[in-house]
Length: 219
Image (cartoon, rainbow, N blue to C red):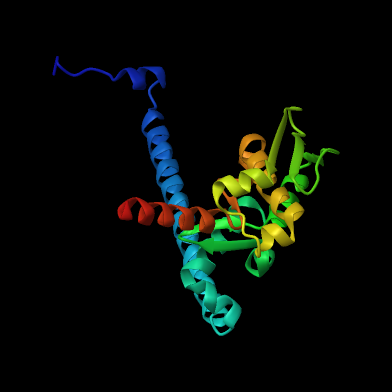
């Protein structure tokens, strides 16, 4: 048959064609790689299912205690997940380090301070700070960036969060420190707090919003 021809691969192989064997080996490698990936995927699924089962068991146990029952399953879940994301020990988060308010997670000022300093960053209080104002200076450990923020009693009064018989009147320095720290963290350490506000901000903001809406509707 004059139409018959010798494949180029056979000519290269000097009469013995190794190309088909190479193709078979490549195909086997592909199949093995696929099987390996499948096994890894199944292992991750199994691991996830085990973790979910473990979390469910933990929730069931926690809900037996009034402290955690008050947070609710959704609150406990949100706090656990957020604490893992920002690197705060879960038990620390559940026991006063974090709060679940209006569907969002807040950080206690002590926990926020802890996370920032854990990252090697610096926070110093200005000597001019007193019972009327708190001034904080921050400095990043990685690039040396600096920022200054403050919060005062006058600001608290203008915002409508200052109450004569509340914590603002009893512990002004602590309250101002928390607000100044939250401001500083949002500007200089957003990667550390990852969107968290300091404890009290969300609830108070909601109260002010509701009061403003009610006042507007009456007007």
